[in-house]
Amino acid sequence: MAVLPILEFPDPRLRIRAEPVRAFDASLQQLVTDMFETMYGANGVGLAATQVNVHQRVLVADMSDERNQPLALINPQILEKDGSQVYQEGCLSFPGLYADVTRALRVRVRAQDVHGGEITVEADGPLAVCIQHEMDHLEGKVFVDYLSSLKRALLLKRLDKQRKQAATA
Ligand code: NI
Image (tube, rainbow, N blue to C red; front, side, top):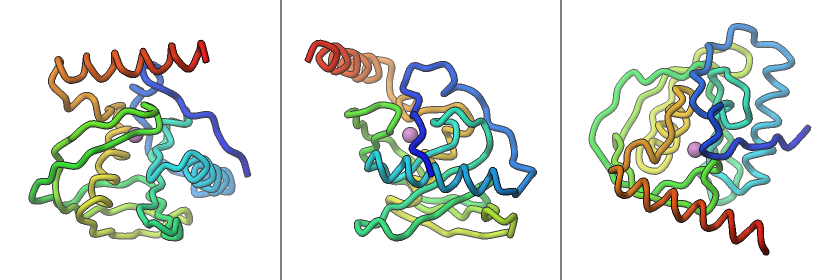
């Protein structure tokens, strides 16, 4: 097992569109294991393979307080979505930054498990947010893309400031 380095915005590799997974082999299982370890280690609720510089359609999530409901989705596709919700999102690629984003309230997703079996997940509330956020990463999209240019500029300025403070601390 290994904790993988997480790409941070504005790393251009966060903009790469991920490719479908075709081989459900030991290296995929290793990737998923490492992604869970990386996500839990960083106290995150979700992580897309893109964020660890692997450009395959893989995401992991766990929204539970007890950190005992791991969900791994390979090649996820949204079948249906409805409703809308505003949720304050964060992202391991934007440490310390949070912003309100509007997304669908409910999603029904078809995906594969690590062995290639087909699974369907119905999610609402925070888990639905998380799945949509991580699926965006696989498209090279990040949550600040949803903000107005003014809000985004303010947020990125704050990120810059935090980095400078961290560098001089
Ligand atoms: Ni993210």
